[in-house]
Length: 230
Image (tube, rainbow, N blue to C red; front, top):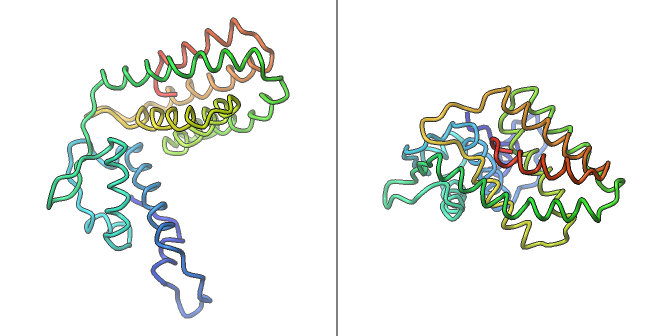
């Protein structure tokens, strides 16, 4: 639980006598690693909605000081994943099925017309370059690795939207996408079959884009957002 990359330990200057000293990592790098680990814990359901977590206690689990944990938690508070409880810590926000449906609706309103516009203008060879990203979602889903699937899912959608050349679109879409991946309160973790089905939609969508089959593209992108989490 709460695994932190080796670089975080290096940042604290940890090494054995048999290991050569490693250049110190700046604190903001540790904070970023903790933020990534906390986001993974949210997606995996290890950080439970409604539960209160203190920065010192999480710091002990991560093997770092409370400072980068507190800074990472402040970022999650800005993103709406947790709320600050003065003098106590951070509580993971409880989410409802309605909130998830609203996020899916907003994502569809933004991404569907963009994808349809790109389908008419982007050449097949550009879409083919994204095939490894679609394959990565399939591999993560096949392993049942929810955190890896969430990351590869975001990477695929970001790469598609990046073809529009609109940086503000990427920022807004990324925030909505990440929030849509947080689990519901008291909800079971997504089934293996659901992840596999979502990943298959990525591959099917990409093939339709390569073939410039606009009818299939429109059907797939709408189904993708009215389905589960992809």
